[in-house]
Image 1 (cartoon, rainbow, N blue to C red):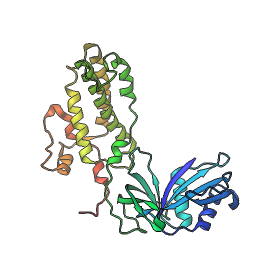
Image 2 (spheres, rainbow, N blue to C red):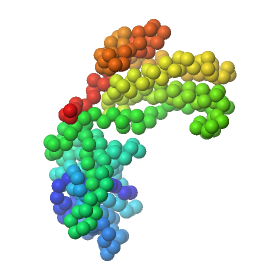
Image 3 (cartoon, rainbow, N blue to C red):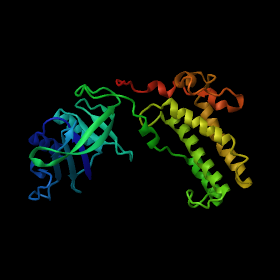
Image 4 (tube, one colour):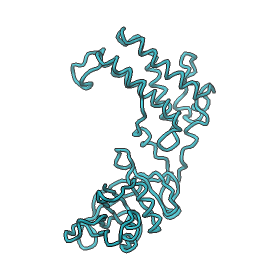
Length: 311
């Protein structure tokens, strides 16, 4: 299993070798550490670690491969182990597909969300090109790296997909009216409407699932995201008359199920909490038939938003 890590500070290879050996409970001579491009190494070693310097804020990049005979660990666990053993800060990729989604872990074992950008390459020592990495933000201050900017990183929230079993079940009933290729030029209007309704219902179910599970992946939810979800619920309110007659009843049943779950996890404050957070630029509707705008979870998930130290 490969692990791709970035570390800060000088690279002490003997300490790195010892830490990897202890991690996998193998003799130290079964750990091979080499610079990128080296071919004369023990490729049968239990642990293969390739290292090379990088420019920017991290100092070294590591690619670690564990042999099949070695017990594997999660990337987060390996990063935390090395951070503790090397007394340094380690970056490792998040599970999201977004390239900038990373985690940072220090010697204290605390995992902090980070936004990392690849700024290309620059000419390093010895006329060798080195990748350049830049940490745009971390969600909380890092004691070992006090100059790093910290700010909320909301984009990974939308990347984190929630299970939507209610919507998935409805899809089987909608299938005859769903387009095979939504972006096709000849998609019938009824197929476009059906796909849009199915998509919006999935987003509404995703919001309810986030409430239930404690606002994954990071325990908070921006007010702007919440507003967008309520706007999608507005669209669902108009969907009944747009859908083909045979699927109106199952759609209404699915929506009513999700609405009941939404109500049990929210309270009616007249829209005050959301209105206060969004400000005058995004007035909250007060119509009684759009009751979902009046409801908010307690505590409001945006109240847990990480602080920000950038202007």
